[in-house]
Length: 213
Image (cartoon, rainbow, N blue to C red; front, side, top):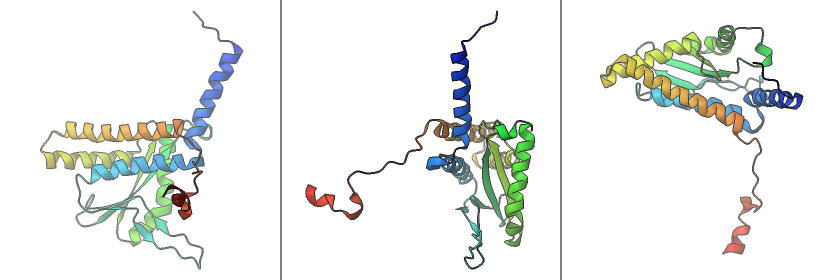
């Protein structure tokens, strides 16, 4: 049995779908940045249960104003992930694999392209800094690039050893934590406000306090 929809209902359906796709990529209001930071902080929090030396936003190249170089800053630095006493640096990229610009490519190819772009920007600078670079590339619906997958398994294996729990349990824990972070971050982009609130009291200079006191 075919269910026929009125033209107005079809238009409303496609309009809502288009609005959702736009919301996932719209940078207005800083929600895309907050989505990125939500996932970065989740990974950093899980990693802190395994390794002790963790730095948020490590700088691998200082800014050079004279040469118009903004420098390079990554998302996380964790000592000892791949080699003892060697810094492993990570940078997160969240991709909407269903965006119109990606229609002709598979999700795996899109994630691979994102990982290669991260390496192009950061890898050489990290090597010169004598560290290891790993891109953390994932989609808005939770699909992971193979290097991100490898890192999560590394965390889960170390947690299993530390907590003396089966690997299957710690792997499930790590994946669940990240899955909830992705859900929160994606929901924020879809439902969060992009309007910056402005105070009507003019509290910057403290003058309104005199009327209260």
